[in-house]
Image (cartoon, rainbow, N blue to C red; front, side, top):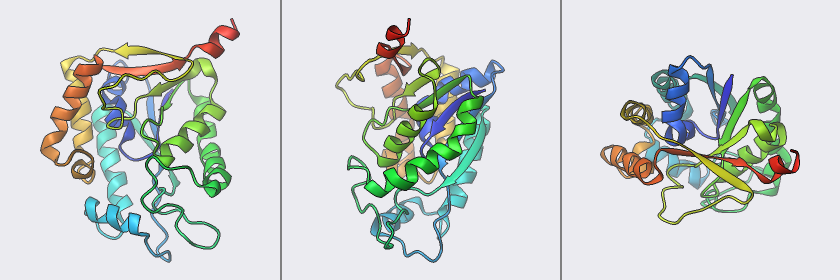
Length: 248
């Protein structure tokens, strides 16, 4: 089984949709495991950040029900099997006294100490059996610094062997003109066919609640995706070289 680990219910389609579609079309069993998929507790008041996101998503008071359904539709487009791991999104998490961990600082801000104490081991626990069963594991580079991406990357790195691990570029955070090279890593490029790129776009379109927030409008999405894929030359994946070399 090939495992793609997604912090949220859209990250793999956004970042890896063309390659996932290629693997699944070739008969490879592909699983997309999404970490933050749980409904928020009804007895917790929503933080300002959560209220803002709910207004953008327009999915009512229980938006993650709709978001999980969007993910299932996208996975059908790509030919992958969805797994929802039922941890809370950063916008819902609270400290021991009930205060929100994050206000507007969950993208690019520091991971709250309580998340290192609680969310990281919880992510490790739910991911461990999937990572053990996988022959290859893909996780986010955490470009953009979203705390959920940072935690998921740390969790996967603690579980996967270095030869099996690949990192994907978090789109649209990675959509920037400057070049970057993660320390100790090299990249491999997957050149997408027109059909694979179209599948990626069709899968992203399944996440209707996210399109305006991510791209400004649903109509802007295909052009942004095509522009990024054209600039990169497909989809780019990173792997550790320093540690591999030291073990040869």
